[in-house]
Amino acid sequence: MTLLGQSNLDETQKLASLARVWGFLKYHHPNITNGSHDWDQELIQKIPQVEAAQSPQALQDIYINWLESLGKVRHCGTCKPIANTDFSENYHLEWITDTTIFSKNLSQKMMFIARNKKKSNEFYAMPVKGAGNIQILHEPAYHEMAYPAESYRLLALFRYWNIIAYFYPYKYCADQPWDEVLTELIPKFKDCSDTLAYHMALLEMVNKINDSHGVFTTPVLNQYKGSLFPPVVVKIIANSVVITDYFDSKKAWENDLQIGDVITAIDHEDISSLLQQKLKITPGSNPAAKMRNVAMDLLRSNKSRMLFSIVRAGEPMEKTVEYYPYASFNKPQKPIEPAWKILKNEIGYVAMGELQQGDVAALQQDLDSLPALIFDLRQSPHNTLFDLADWLLPESRPFVKFSKPDMLHPGNFYWDAIRYCGTNNPKHYKGKIILLVNEYTQSHAEFTCMGLQTADQVTIIGSQTAGADGNVSKIVLPGGYYTLISGIGAFYPDGRETQRIGIVPDIVAKPTLTGIREGRDDVLEAAIKFAQTH
Image (cartoon, rainbow, N blue to C red):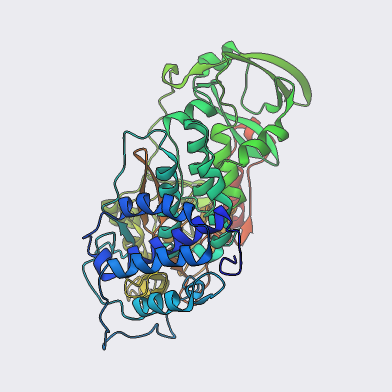
């Protein structure tokens, strides 16, 4: 990005430089970090000035005068540089010293601010006490702006882009370099022609971080995706779109739709083509999570009926399917499953989504003598890790370390102390332990899996998990909308990543079309077979 060497300034480059300077000052300058300025309005006022700048010198003058108007920054004799042991993959201030963008004088002023940032009560961002994930504060929501004016649309982009730049622990592993995201999206936010275009731009922006926590939706987007649904649930299995459950079994029967049906086309559009279209606007850390998420939106429509091309037991057929409001479905009441039970061949099974903290003592009493235990983490657990670890582990063992935001050097992260689970327990469980995982294993479930896999004789069976670990942080966007990010980094003690990668199974096992049709849990059956034969 070259500005000083150009006679004709590029609109996008000018605005990108403004986004950088505004965000840098927001999180570094002591008279901004203390909340004494209406920083949103400062940006709104600067946008037309920057757009009107006709020369590189005029642009530099805007920034120099801006810095001088904010007051003096005093030298900090006690400020320390980033430690060599910190996690600094995200810390990038090289752009400040790039003299093709900024004058030497401006670069020196900004670097002085960066090197002399003191510890203070931050107005816009503070770590949550205890957990340490970033808490974004005092950001106006502008609820009245479903379709904001251009300057506020750019504010939405600049706000989010800088939060990610300085406080997102996984910025370094996104598919696209974050600098490129800014210049790519500025024209899209400027040119939004209506409310839907603005919301689609926000969705594209949020999806750029490749984070399964980074969901974003609005009533406008929901209407665009479709407010009507067929009475069935689908999943992507072996690259096929398969009916796996019912929203309403009576309505499904009336439309002659059955579990195990493979949908190959809708209104004569090939399902793979529709799938690719929907994936472009679907969030997720990895392909497994994106396929999980896209399945929820794939069949939505605003039409009252659609023509389904399906394959049932090898036979192709077509069905005209009625669509309904989701609220109209008579959703079946599923029976309450026990938190644990004993399967055939004396194998214990624990439904981690049902197990509560107070249940572990009784669970241990019932299952401790069994030769093998299966813990199903394909559902979200309820803070039972440490109680389980005290039973399953012979000693206290390290299982995770976190990277947390460094408020003295925004963009840098420091390593928190390694966390341990388990206790000295000579009477710990001695049998085989099997952990079941899939794309629904996300966040706290992945954290729990990391702890449990430190036990002896552990085998993980299933498929790639969602790859989104770490406490979430909320970001408010103009229009009164919000999204989430993974707010701290979660790593194995040796530094191996979990974000995007997820928990890697030892044995890959996935549902099959035959298993779906016959009502079997192929992954659980694979676990039972392993427990019996190994």
